[in-house]
Amino acid sequence: MSTERTSDPIDLLVVGGGTAGLPTAIEAAENGLSVLLVEKSGHLGGTLWRSWAQMAAAGTELQSRHGIHDDPDLHYDDVMRISRGTANPELVRLAVDHGAETIDWLMSRGFDMDPDAPAILYFHEPYSVARTYWGRNAGRSVLDVLLPEVQRHIDQGRIRVRTGTDLVGLRGGEGPSVDAAVLRSAAGAVEEVEAHAVVLATGGYAGNPRLFPLLTDGAPLRGPAAPTSAGDGIIAALALGARLRGRDMFLPTYGGTLKPDSDWVTSHLDDYPLLTPQSRLPWEIHVNRSGRRFVAEDDESVDKRENALTRQSGLEFWIVYDQGAAEEASPLFPAWEKEDLEKAFSEHPSFARADDLDELAALTGVDPQGLRTTVEEYNAAVATGTDPWGRTHLPAPIDRAPFYAVRNHGTALKSPAGLAVDGRLRVLGGDDRPFTNLYAVGEALGGSSMSGRSFVSGMSVTPALSFGRLIGRAVAGADHHRRT
Ligand SMILES: Cc1cc2nc3c(=O)[nH]c(=O)nc-3n(C[C@H](O)[C@H](O)[C@H](O)COP(=O)(O)OP(=O)(O)OC[C@H]3O[C@@H](n4cnc5c(N)ncnc54)[C@H](O)[C@@H]3O)c2cc1C
Image (cartoon, rainbow, N blue to C red; front, top):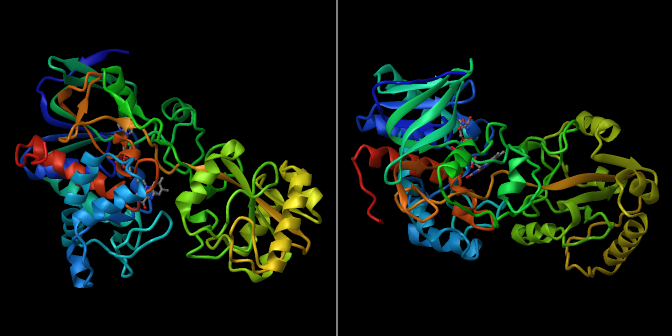
């Protein structure tokens, strides 16, 4: 394998054509730079093809139109309250200060906003104000704005795109700085590309089950992230002496089922069971491997349920219910057809159905004595109206065969650890000195930078878009961050 070197350094090399990389390239091109955008998969878009892309911003024109009073300070306070002060204050500040202009920018380019937005959502711990936005077609609605913008700049010769090309390393320079990126084409040709500035927009590592525990204090990976989220940019920067932060910030999302043929890939997020009590009150109980409950299933705080899950062996639990709930409760899997569910209970290793609780325990590997006792205790709570876990929604006992169990896992939609950066989003070395021309953006910064050891609504996609735009402008010299 030979390494070729290109002749003229380019203005800006953006590595990764996803949520953060696309706006970086657009804004840099808009400000006159010549941009090379390299993307390892065959197409642009990254995680936006699968993300719900709920976005958060305070002080938008849309909020004003709805008469919602909000501002970046309130947003900042909410993020810090929800994350219990574990999010990165400097980056959160930067994100909340630029969120509204990002949403307004999307709207000015025809973003297909869902008519119910903005709203307070409950999949994560709620904000105090309606400030979450989403497109009618989730992440694809964002791409419907970004991709034509990129195309416009391609047509004008400002952006060149190379798909099927991946970053395999970085060559350092003086200072510290970066001189060149080592790229490999799909055909295996390796080339060094010199650039005045390099932006790592390669995403996180929630698609890499081998790397995930290594960068996350041993936490196992189960999740629906893209396989392209392999941590490449983070690894390349670490090899150059960059610093990682957030490795102790893992928190699982509460409940997702595996694909039948995988021990770590979960179903699409839309196919997860609906465990948000604000959207659907539970008729089921949740038990761990010992067959014991560990939380009030209807607790309104998802943060509390997620933290309770971190204390369960294997980060797994089973949703247990009976025929009565199967018939009377609203669907646990709202996105599934009846036949899909029937098929799952016949074939899927995570789905079990049995005529009695002992058989259900045998099928699932849950402790039979524990499960029997738990169901007895729960049925007593239903009869008395008093639950030892504090659950208040106690619609019916679990006593009608057949009995059902669905194995769930704590899952990762995004990876917590990432590259430490300064207030101008320049990658920091081990000695905390910034690389003068190496930037990181999006999930490469670590999902925990914006939400700490918690999840805060819309605080991945909006900052990825906003920071991309800021870097594009900053490299072009069109704007200098005032908060440095
Ligand atoms: C199912 C799901 C739902 C989500 N919902 C939300 C939500 O509602 N709100 C929210 O805020 N967040 C959400 N998130 C998280 C959020 O979508 C991501 O954190 C964000 O999209 C990541 O953006 P990114 O640009 O960093 O990475 P990506 O969008 O993944 O882009 C990275 C790009 O870099 C490319 N790449 C990787 N390595 C290389 C390499 N070596 N060389 C060249 N290219 C490379 C990849 O192929 C990819 O195209 C969700 C995540 C998932 C998985």
